[in-house]
Image (cartoon, rainbow, N blue to C red):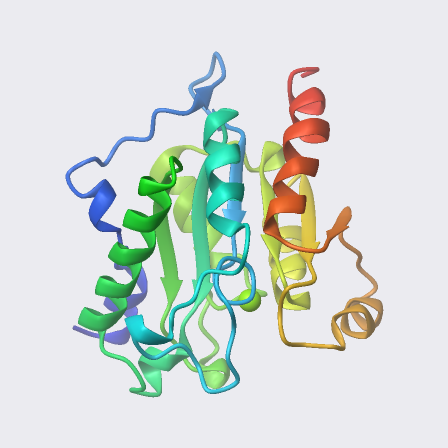
Length: 221
Ligand SMILES: [Mg+2]
């Protein structure tokens, strides 16, 4: 498989296998609303400077399973958007990454939530691809696949790249979670002259904010 083809592969968790449709909130034009794009490392699971290379290294951050359950229970569709240059670096195989994502989806499902899909960039930072965050390519792929109303969607992540990606894609809101490894996120956002709409300690707090404030905004459309 070429690297371009692999960038288009969707690493779908076991809980979603065979279920290609998303039953989410749609408007009269058929656009999927209330979509939350979630970064993975540092947002859902603990990040590592050495990359997450196997299922054994995947460790949910406290509250993240509950956060996705709360989003699901409140009608939000959760889609994971993740840079995984570990693939290009050959630190992990596609098969192990798929197995890791299947495990992540199963755990979220057993907690009562749902990750509807996972879009993954497998490239190196210097490859100039269109899908590595902060580029908006992964969100564009999701929009095309599910007819998502991007202006009503929210991007959540722990890095400046995530917030920039959300902005570049045209997401209505962005939320920064302070559960990652980078101590210089605020500085990097300042340098880019952008800011998140909300800063939360972790994904559970981010979900609370999304559920209380974004729901009100979206239903006013
Ligand atoms: Mg991250």
